Length: 365
Image (cartoon, rainbow, N blue to C red; front, side, top):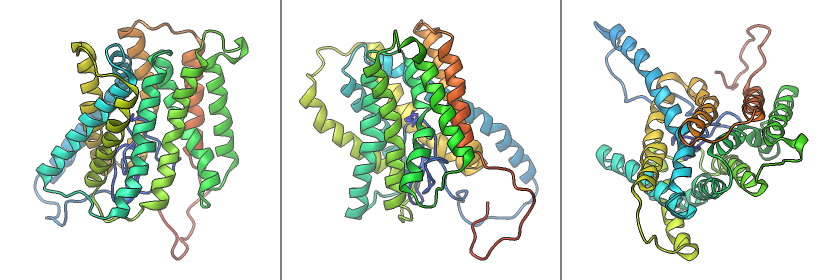
């Protein structure tokens, strides 16, 4: 979830939001962590032997392996909204979020130790990552947790899918290189038509908790704000994806550890099922999901890896209906499809009429 769910990023870092991608290309909706969605180039372990006996077999093995990991990532992020709902049955929303980022940070920091990598040392980097941790983790995760007190997890998952739409709109304003096109504007309009369909606007939003829905939409808006900030401040930072993301989640944990005691009382009990849900939300949906996403981006590229965005609301809806017995009216899945169609349109590129000579200094795909 966001993703969240996850995540855009800065320098070499990458998890669920990318290596200084534009918000419209970094649309992963799981836990959003600096450098999480679309590194600009595949990661390489360094020079190695060229193709030799067995190299074709290894490539076939990897080709068979990535669809399984892709499906696992879709499931983990899709079920994150169910985990949030179950977690709030035993703990306050801020406590659910604190547990989420703490368990996620533990996974990434453990990997840092295993890989013998270090956290960034620059005070400037830590300062920018503090802002990123707020907008990409602490704020949206908390808003989703509060929203699910009054709205179904299915609706929260669909609201999360609007993040690419918010990102496209904001990037046009904040990033001079992202120019509006008819295709992108049409996608934005279609996407928000889908939101109105999900909410049943023609019925006066009857049966919809507007405050909870607004918080879920606000969480989705927070992600591209964080992505744009990271892109403008941390692009080119000389740190690994794992180091940056681990630091970001660590800072989010500190932020929530300060705020949570001010607005909640310590739990009098720790019910097993909600506790397991919070652990799964953090360790799997936030920490392990980053490792999956980063590996997929490095292996199959950001364009294919970011397709996870379009499966998350489908899985979130199926999980909410099947496991939590949430009710689903016809306009919810129809509206979700319209939202996803609009989001896809904002990220698509028009087909070129034919190859054109590359200009000096021009970026090529």
